[in-house]
Amino acid sequence: MAWPLAIFLLHDLTGSWLLLLLGCLLLVWRMPDARVLALIAAAVLVALGLFSQAELGMRAYPVAVNIIMFCLFASSLIKGQSMIERFARLQEPDLPPEGVRYTRQVTWAWCGFFVINGSISAWTALYAELATWALYNCLISYLLMGLMFAGEWLIRRRVRRVNA
Image (cartoon, rainbow, N blue to C red; front, side):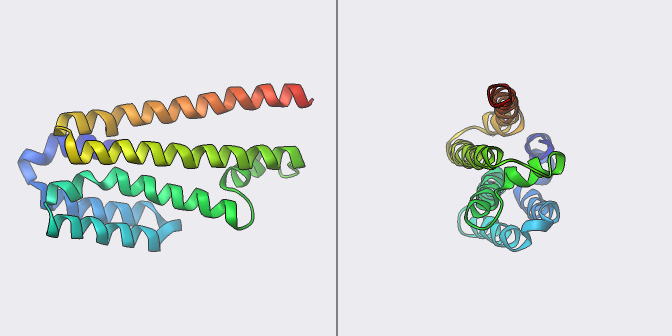
């Protein structure tokens, strides 16, 4: 959340290249469980900066985060436990089969969220003014994520009542 705000506030003071490089370091540091994906994303962001413009590479940071999150969640659907099942088992180690099915559906929903959110982030990176980009990536996308969490929580409560 702080990254788009920092860019909006510091861009005129520091320029795009410094923020782009800091963003790449931040991306690799923030994603220890996805280090290879984060390194690839950081390389792509720097390449965008080199072959296009540094500001585009800097603005593409939220897109990279959404792509990494999509890859983590989607790959968990292919191999073993889904991402949401892992989270659920922290609270309920003996998750029943219907809980496993439900967590797979929620993992699919999060994959869809990352695709849509990443697409909107990409559009703002390419076409929107810096203030609009910052507004979406600093506030609106997090509000949408909060709505997704809240909606899933409400649905989960209802499903549990029906299955109880």
